[in-house]
Amino acid sequence: MEYMEELYAMVRMKWRLRRIETGIACNDEDLRFCYDILQAVSRSFAVVIMELDEEMRDAVCIFYLVLRALDTVEDDMSIPVDFKLRELPKFHEHLHDTTWCMSGVGVGRERELLERYTHVTRAYSRLGKAYQDVISGICERMANGMCDFLTRKVETKADYDLYCHYVAGLVGHGLTLLYVSSGLEDVRLADDLTNANHMGLFLQKTNIIRDFYEDIREVPPRVFWPREIWEKYTDDLHAFKDELHEAKAVECLNAMVADALVHVPHVVEYLASLRDPSVFTFSAIPQVMAMATLSLVFNNKDVFHTKVKTTRGATARIFHYSTELQATLQMLKTYTLRLAARMNAQDACYDRIEHLVNDAIRAMESHQKPNGESVARSMLMRYPALGGHLLYTLVDNVVGYLGK
Image (cartoon, helix red, strand yellow):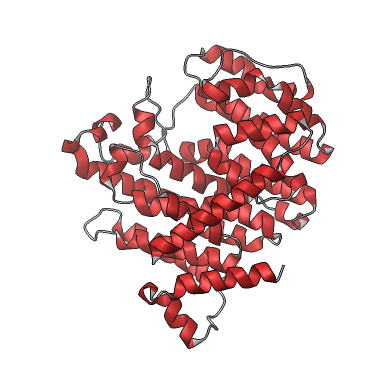
């Protein structure tokens, strides 16, 4: 029945995508380019962003493309470091020059993004000043952080947290400031950006763990796992690709997962503080996806031989249900427990993982409402073999649709 539920979610997701693609058709050539290139460089983000209302959606779309263009320059290994150190710190200044573009950097649609960057800057020029200030400010801070790590490696866990702050935590800062600037969220959300930073770090660390195989195979290899963690298990991180070192590789992997789990309680607190439904959905989906990914990569040797990903059905299910706090907490809890089910008492990180899992579950349960559903509904929802979960999902959606 879980398969049927995921199939239903996939159908709903495709139907929603078609409505979205029709809805963003507009006479603004610049915005049309922005949304088209967004779907090409990050289809998953393009789907998530459509949960936002139009004004906020445009601002976040442009915010993402500005940072993606910046990242394309930093990420191109064919470009000399001196060029990057010269260009990155002033990248934010190009936002105010609607004629500026860059050629010969990046590949595919990312190269096109830079070559046709005038569309982005013209769209940026039509945003409200509050949005512009946030986007420009975060771009400048991120660029400076990238320059810092162009000249040194990620050695300590403190380095790792700082690097993730620059490339992802600042995104959490920026999004929070955009939410507040739009009036959709309470101004107090921006008073303390600690949890916003944790939102970014949790996503970035999950991606770094998942992408080990792809990153280590690049020429030259890209290494983001901190030496302070991996040196306890090997003298050479490249050795983890060899099956002879599989046991130590998995132990190191689990230590990396433990480091990511530290952020989960903060993620829960941030999500629980949001009040606008569209902002909540946009914020929640990537976090649930990250937890689902961690539950798959934990204690999984395949991470060192391929890219481990959630299935399309599971992804569609997450998109479908991450629309309000209670359902989101339940999914986060489910994936956290799936991760816990993969624990091995012989693992060196067992006690730490168990402690972190318990902390995460407590944070989730502190915001979960008491279960007041009927006995019949409880039984049917709890046991998929009875077919109740899919049945109630269908009924709830029909009732919800008729009630709109």
